[in-house]
Image 1: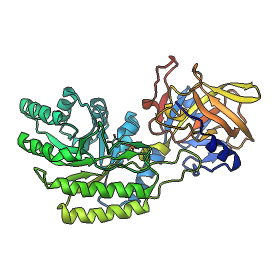
Image 2: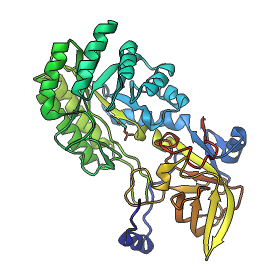
Image 3: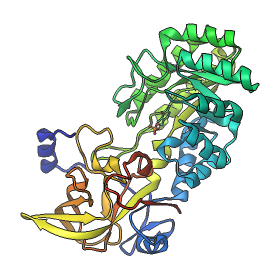
Image 4: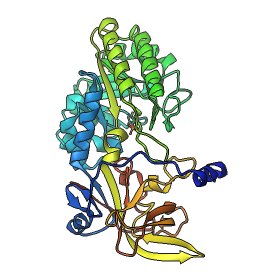
Amino acid sequence: MQSPDKEAVKETVRQPPQHAPLVQFPVVAGQLQIGGQPLTRLADRIGRTPFYAYGREQLSARVKSLREALPAGIELHYAMKANPMPAVVGHMARLVDGIDVASGGELQVALDAGADPREISFAGPGKSELELRQALAAGILINIESFREVTLLARLSAETGYAARVAVRVNPDFELKSSGMKMGGGPKQFGVDAEQVPDLLAQIGQAGLGFEGFHLFAGSQNLRPEAIIEAQQKSFELALRLAESAPAPVRTLNLGGGFGIPYFPGEQRLDLAPIGQNLAALQARAKQELGGTRLVIELGRYLVGEAGVYVCRVVDRKVSRGQVYLVTDGGLHHHLAASGNFGQVIRKNYPLAIGNRMDAEMEPGVSVVGPLCTPLDLLGERMSLPHAEPGDLVVVFQSGAYGVSASPQNFLSHPAAAEVLV
Ligand SMILES: *Cc1c(COP(=O)(O)O)cnc(C)c1O
């Protein structure tokens, strides 16, 4: 699953690259503060480890700073698959302009959270007939990703009498450069190839579905503003061309997102200023050339990733042939991404800390592992960490997105992780 990169290892030894500073959670008297309280107190309040904790303050601050960096009028959607905890979705629903769901299950959570159905959109390949029926009944916007969905929606809409609101998810004829995870361009299971979209639009028109716009999503976890700008620019041009075949005016143009956050040493925070400038230019063009289309960006990871931590307790401290292992009660089964097994090609350490000993003396070469019977259950490999003993609390930063819901919780039948919004 991972290939050792010898060059990269050598490089690390010569000059350890620095991580972008993690200042979102303050430290008081050696204790990381989450939700305004010391970590040990929060752990006592929750009553068990491991847990994920998400900060309301950090979530709100992130949306606020993003709004400040983007031009007014750009609509901000939360892609809730990044963190579907109902309390988080409820908090986000009050801050953003819409929620993007990827299943019937997520739709229920979004509606429970109080999201306005007019501002919910549903994307994903393989939508079932049941899910499409739910979506019609809820009155949300459905991002069509295949010819089958047109036929099915036409039939379901006729059967139920519920009007269908649709957008077309386009598989673009370009790729998002240097994206962590490409989700558009070339052959893909997502969306409909740009070349086929004129045909699809004709069928949407014939079927009498309510066409509202286009949706383009090129990829995820990108830290290069110029790549994001290029993707948004090309998405806009493509939408302009496709608009000529549309059966109705393009009211919404969802330009995707893909904004990344720094996980690993050497990675810096995304510079939003040039992205904001580009969006302002596109907004002006949308007004001129598309007649007042609303521009939407949809973000998951960027909105919630830095606002969350995963916390587990040291159960044992072992020395094996000179190397220190902190064995914890949490690991891969709760946090697949931190173990390096959720899409990473080369395993790198997430930022870790000992949350109740933030100012203890550092110990080099410490590995943090979980309780599973597999060497893949690794949270940190040969890191410098404050000296820790059983009972201490290991913190994995940048854990607010693609955490527990993206992990194989049942693997080895350990207890599930708790989740709190504080
Ligand atoms: C997953 C997904 C997102 C969110 O991606 P992030 O990288 O978390 O911002 C947005 N839109 C679509 C269609 C997705 O599938």
